[in-house]
Length: 51
Image (cartoon, rainbow, N blue to C red):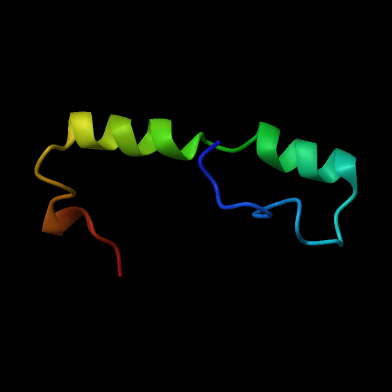
């Protein structure tokens, strides 16, 4: 999914079911970054940043 090794599985505190649940509900990082770059080639406009 483009995440660092152990991002979810290296916690040692989550059951396998919980790990799969988290990964199943996540956005695929590389696809999300690609979509943002396609939709906003100049980046996120300054007025859109939240404080």
